[in-house]
Length: 50
Image (cartoon, rainbow, N blue to C red):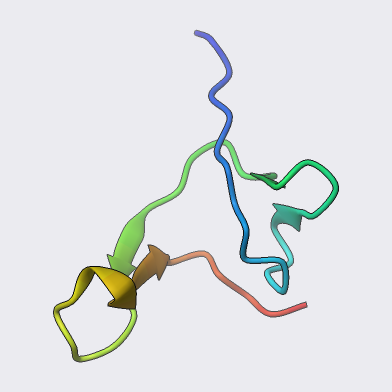
């Protein structure tokens, strides 16, 4: 199976490789992060601040 590259610009997440703007995880799940059902309210559910 080919390795998938996941781009990420959430630089305060501990899984983000800031130098390459890529996620260190092999896969992610996207979810709504607030009660609003807007696209801007979605992000990776693995997000954890550094």
